[in-house]
Image (cartoon, rainbow, N blue to C red; front, top):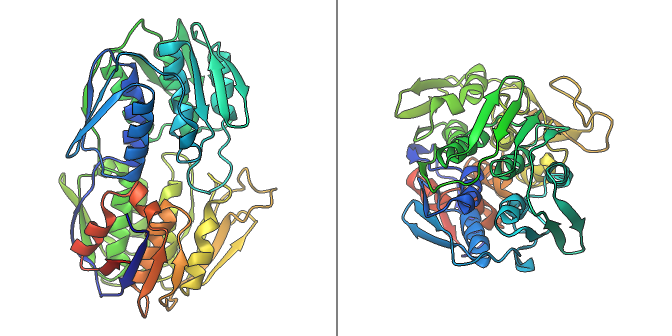
Length: 432
């Protein structure tokens, strides 16, 4: 797979896009399928790099994983090998989620150091603390984490922050633990609930209570199950913005409206007009776009993965906009690439555009002021992560000349066949 795209501005982007399940959901479902007593099936799976990485991890510990178009089948093997090879160090965040399932299946586990996009500290402390509360013995080593547990037991766990990954670790570990686990301050993102529903389909006893509380009663075993993933809300938003930023109109199929409530309202306040049906959503801005002040937050707030496309859209609005990132302190790492393309963005350590957040007394630039009406120009840039990569393509689509984008493997790791999708909307691009 080549890692460079040449992007040529080609006018308004128009057409239809169908989104599949998100990378943030499918990989977690693949891990959950490890707990079933037979082959589980995940449909509407995206063709993204993270799926292939996770597939290789599951195969390395003894599971069979097959793919037929958009359908994944995960099947238990003859024996579980409870060590994820160090070759997977730093590739994504999935190894830490495999600790609980491997402990249930083998009583011990080793997982390498996790990785992912360089968007700020995403420590595994929350995961480790939760597993230790459930009876696991965990030691840190230079290459990763080693864990042992003859049997996990239920526990009361309170997360210092509603972390998506830590919530998923608790779910994946508590469903087969002995007794009841009560998780407080849990993440409630749609992808988390989707995972809980899949586990429930496998026979887990999970109660979603008010005030970010989950109650999981451990069961002796789980059965295999099948499910169809809901459409990726991150991808849906990104393509809606692709139409708006170029003065076109993209019709997005496959993503339920309820996953985009806050995003739709935010874009509508900027002047976007929507047509919404049960089958598709489309957005246009015939009268132009107005500026806005937006701060990211945990669900149901404006999600952090929506802010990168929004940042580029702000550069084409009529006025000054403000973005305040409250989820990851280094999420604005991609700004220099956009500045190189002419985006007029200033980054601040202060909390702007919303109430003071947990980063207010730190040294990270997590707020930005964006000047609208920027004349973007083509440039040669290297993409730092998946969402920033997509945003650079959006900037290149409205630039004054072609752009060369290196590191597009980040985009292909998280978006379903983005090269083909952009080409279908009329963007001129080629691999180099």
